[in-house]
Image 1 (cartoon, helix red, strand yellow):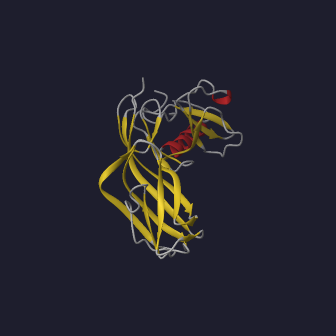
Image 2: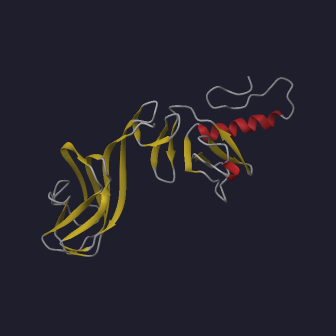
Image 3: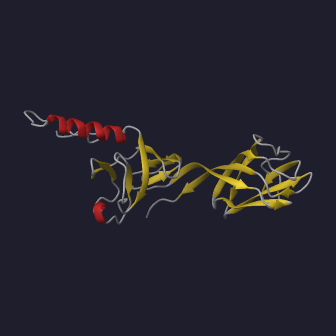
Length: 235
């Protein structure tokens, strides 16, 4: 046996010279894999990677990553080493800010349950800092993704919103679905939860509606839509 079963850590062999090299490599792999934080995913190695950075290698990889499709690429001491992930490994995409899980072929975004062929029930949150536009309403275009089953929208005012006494958050045809009477001062917040989750079948705008006046074009609100989605199985 030359390496461990789960993480593929190299083992020191009997009468091996330069034992420290093997031990240091094992520590480096353990450091990268014990709490997986992926710097990104792609098919081409980045030009200037940081030592210790970990990437997911996409299908059709080329250059320094050619032939390593589906593996993890760890940049260490000026070179690349590769690790084959196992089904069920979980980590964090540092570039997109979402949790991921490996289903045997792909790193699936969001927490949830997955089948052997990639079908899954995924829970996600998407966030945006929205600069409030002038007028009776301010549109957050396409904020709710297609095929999302939304549980609710949360938010917090980051900079005072001028011109209105308060505001509502909703969608076309239901201006206050996710909140009404929301304060306009910095720190005001909303937690808009519907009685039942609602499905949206196309990208859907979220609408901020001014009450007690009109928006004057000042202010910023941070919004997060919290939803579930069903992923399709692979062919």
